[in-house]
Every structure is written in structure tokens, then in C-alpha cells.
Image (cartoon, rainbow, N blue to C red):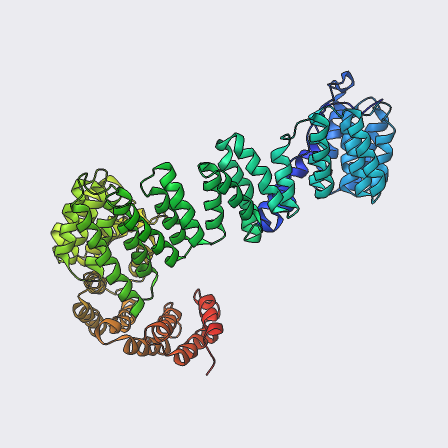
Length: 636
């Protein structure tokens, strides 16, 4: 009797699910062995068998118990149960398939083959493919190949025969054999373009990228819509190896022979960019943009991709191409904005008090201003994307240039863009706060807080509450804000919340917290001397309160603005020495080391402070970063 049942193979499906989980955990290293492995196909010939009708409840219970044992790794008990089921119900093919799978899982290939052979009176293609797989796993290569040949001979005129073998051979990583089988199928079917995706994938798995690309070129020749599918098939190999060998040469030949074929040119440009050959990618994308009449948008996409890939020179070249070759287009306007965005990100990522931070901020400011000037003469006005430009320009005006009037201009300009009412209100609140218009700031921020408890406005309002002595109200705002840590103000809210928690005054007043909040508020306003004075008042009048120690840290940090980075580094080290058990002692050492490292370029002194941090606070959250810098800096 042939094993022709289509009964479900529960154990096999569970194994595949577990393998998929492991594959996701291990990542790209297993892509060619697992993620790209197609599932075992169902038999093309098997039909439902009457013998698979529902049996006694006890048998079903025993099967379920056996499956649970196997899923838990208790194979011996599971196999024993399955063997008993096969003996008791020889007509139930489901039990036999489960037992074969269990044998295979424990590498008991001889037992699996014996059970399979006992039922191969009229084998199907799937039976023979399975038998060949077991023979291969048992190390009987010649027998396996002969069995697979027998499978092909059974139904050589059916495409499903070759696909069944393709799936199994790919699973076994027998790529060359699978290639031979698929090519044999093409000849047998008399269809030269059959199995294009299967063969292309096999060539890629075998490292034959040029041959793989020829198959994809043939596929795109008849259906350009498959471009994204082709890219998705190639992407894992690019991620794993970083390149596809001579595949680009095949594409270059295809483009040369078919210069108007957009899918070929698009794939070639994409391949260049993925392999970081940005000069060639720029040339190809420029040609593609012209071919599609995209008015620079395609080249602009390359600039964005290069910027995200941390290839600033390539991004600048692409932006220059947009400005010079696609003038008077929206893409040209956006190119100016993207150039400003690149400088803005450099400023945000730069260490404070460094030349890099200053240069990046100045470049972002001038580039944004130039973009605004260019857009002002455009007939259709600035693109909608310029809304974020104005927001960032306002941030630079307040945080770097101390220019609230420029921030007000940005606030007014945002009115021309729809959907940014909340951002405008928040900006108005920030401007009022920066200029010490506290009542105006509260009015703007309150309107946002009434709409959402999670708005960053809540943190600024809590600071104003503390400044005014309304401690309970500030606590309520911070509690609401800390119910969700996904917003930008979460870290600031935690710091302020901790300050309230550490407020332990002997009387019922909130005087220490008011002084502390006044210092924090003056820092937000960039009124450095006034902030220092507020902290000094707290320290002098209430030196024994926990907030007084925090105020000493804030004063040490403020020294960078009032005196310079070197003085701040010294003051922070002094704080860490004076209060070695304070929760911010490690923070003080790390900030001091970074000021010496990046702002002062005193690498020997910085390395010494990093080492002090590691010795005195080995479990600090800053330890990993400190250790990385110690390895990078030269030992004195």
C-alpha cells in the first residue's frame, strides 16, 4: 500500500515553526540555510484516504500525548507511543507519517526508511522524494540520487515533480543537484522560461550571482512589475555578503542592449547603491530619472538613501546633481532642505561644546535660510515638507543662537502649512518660556495639556508649577507623563520626578524645590548666571537638603557655559570626589571625561577619568561607553 494520504503532519509543522523562531533570533547568518528555504511541499499526487477517518478517542488522545512528548524533547516516550499506535492501527497512515517524522528528528533514518519501504507498493513522487531525503541524511548519496531519478521518471511531464524535488534539495542544501533537476525539468517540459524564480534563487544560494541575474533579467523582460520581487530576493544576499560579484556586469549588458527598459536600469541603479558604488548609482539614477521624467525625484531618493547610510559625500553629490540638472523643480527645493537636514542631524549627534557641534549648527542654519530664500520665489510656494524645516530653524534659533525673534518668524511661517497647529502652539510656549513670559507660556502649554496628558508641554508645565510652589500639581502632571515612556520628554520627566521624590524638607514649605526649579527654568532659558545664582541660594540657605547636593552638580555642569569646558570638567570631578555615593557621581565623572575627550581634546586626561569611572563605579550605566573610549584612546 502506498503512503498517499494527505493527513496533516503536525510534528513537521511544529518543527518548522520552532526553526523559524531560531532563525529570527540568529539573524542573517542563517538566511541562506533557513530563511530562504521554502517549506516542504505537499504531494502533488496524494488524495485523501478513507483510512484516515477519525478513529477511537483513545487513539487520538495517544497521538496528542505523543506529539506533546516530542515537542518537549522527550523523544523516547513519544516514539514509543507512536510505535504502539502504528502497531494497533496499521491502516491509519497519519500515525505512520508522525512516526517517520519522529524517527527523522532523532536521526533514526534506518527505522524511518524501513517503515516507509514497508508501505511502498505503489509509491508516489512525494514518497520517493521523502525516501531519497532519508537516504541522503543517512549518508547513502548514490541511493538517494537513484531514488530521486525514479521520482522524476514516475511523472516527468509534470512541473510539480520538479518543484517537489526543488524544495527538498534546497532544504538539504544540495544546490547543484537542485539546479540540475530544474534544468532537466525545463527540457522535459519544453519550456525554456520555466522555473525562472526557482533557478535564480538556487544560483544565488550557490554563489553563482551572474547566472542568477541572467534568470532575473529574463523574468523582467516579460514582466517589469516583478522588479520589487527581484529586489526582495536579492536583498538577503547583499546583506550577507555585501555584494553580488559579477551580477552587475550582467545587468550592465542588459541595459546597454535595452536602454529604454526602465526595470533593468532601476535594478542596476539599486544594485550599485546597495553595494555602495554611489558614483555609478548616481549616473544610473540620473538616467532613470530622465527616462521616467521624474523631475529629479529619483535622484533625490538616492541622496536620502546615501544620507541614511552615513555616506555624506555621496549624498552631497546627489543633491548637487538635483540642483544643477533639475533646476526650478520641487526636487531642487527639497534638495536644499535635505542638505540642511544632514547638517541638523550632525549638530544633534555632536558632543556639546565641540567645534563639530558649532560648525554643524551654523551650516544647518545657513542652509535652511538659503532654502527658504529659494523657495520664496517659487510660483507654487514652498513644499509641505518645509514645515519641519521651520520647526528645526526655530529650535536652532532658541538653542544655539539665542534669537527668539527668529523663532517667532518660524512660528508665523508655520501658519501656511496645514496639520501643524499643535506644533505651533508648543513652539509659542517655548518662545514665551525662553523670553521669561511665564504667564504666556502657561497659557499656550495649558491648551495642549488639556488635549493630551502625554504632550511634552506637561513637563514644562510641571517645571512652572514647581517654580510657583505648586508641588502637588507638578507631581500629578509628571505621573501622567510617566505613564508612557515613548515620548521625547520622558527622560526629563524622570529627572524632575526624582527631584520631587528627594524633597525632604523639615517644614511644610517647598522652598528648596522652588529654588531648584528656578535654576532648571533659568537653564532652559539659557540664563546661565541666573541659574547658577538660584542653585547657589539653595546651597547656602539649605545646605543639608538632598536637593542641595543636586544643585552642586548642576553648578558644576553650568561651569561649561560660564567658564569653559575645562573648568566644568574639574568641577565635576570635584563633585564625584566629594559625594562618591551620590547617584550622579558616575554621571559627573563621565561628563567630565567627555568634556576633556571631545571639547578639550585632552585624551590622556580623559582616559584617566574614564578609568576612574570604571574602577569606582563598575556597574554604572556609563561603564560600557567608558570602556569603549578607554580602548580607543592611546595609553599615556
